[in-house]
Image (tube, rainbow, N blue to C red):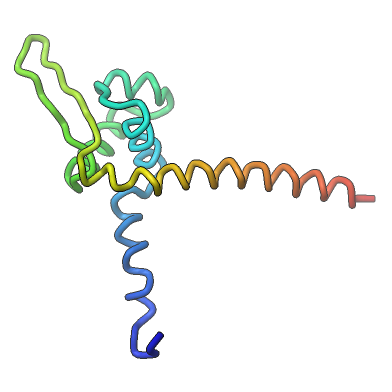
Length: 122
């Protein structure tokens, strides 16, 4: 690769991706919507019992702003709002699946490393 390409160019795609899906809750919300389909706010809240209402609202707004999810409002009483992954957001399906798989592998790696340390300890 030519030396004149800056390091920031090489990592720009990762940085943009992390801006869109990074954080504690966005990947989990997105993974749920990708795998479980359309969800209402209350359903997401029940699936994520430790997230606050305000944090869930903020994360959904940011994902919507970035075009990853769509918020559909039904004009009925009481109001009904649903969230689902946009066509653009569907392109993250492989990444999210890979992240989930890597997490399980890393958990096993950590368990094995801990067991190995215990075997080697006097």
